Image 1 (cartoon, rainbow, N blue to C red):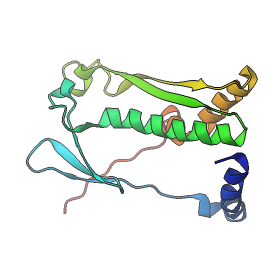
Image 2: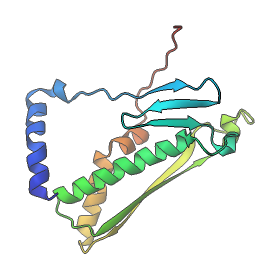
Image 3: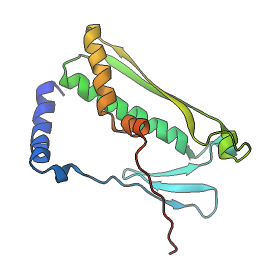
Amino acid sequence: MDVAQLRALQAPIKERYKADPKAALITLKARGSIDNENIACKLETGRALGLAGLHPGAGGSGLELCSGDMLLEALVACAGVTLKSVATAIEVPLRSGLVFAEGDLDFRGTLGIDKEAPVGFAEIRLGFEVDTDAPQDKLDLLLKLTERFCVVYQTIRSGPKVSVSMQRV
């Protein structure tokens, strides 16, 4: 896809959202069901069914998907799509590119071993390796805009309001 195709694809969507800002507010959803046999959750991804379980560092078998890995994978996927979209929009030719994310966890927190140990990622690092002849100022702009427009990165960075509820069925 080139810049003209991208603009043509997005132009009517942008116009609709400018004319009707409420049309741009979309609720994404995820669902899963608790596995009755194992410590696992069956995820409905819209494309396939995934089985999430405990990470081996918390006693899991390693055969199920780990939620922490999935968070990093979502970040990599979103950042990669955003990078490619922005590169196309600002005409930075990429011969190839790699996106990687890694995060540090202290399992003492999630296992309740140490009340002082945090539950969750203490640090997440996102990186890109690109093969391009673009000048450094264009690469700097590419990184800046990728950070700005990556939904998952901005969500993790900003810490949105989150609520939790439970209902009896």
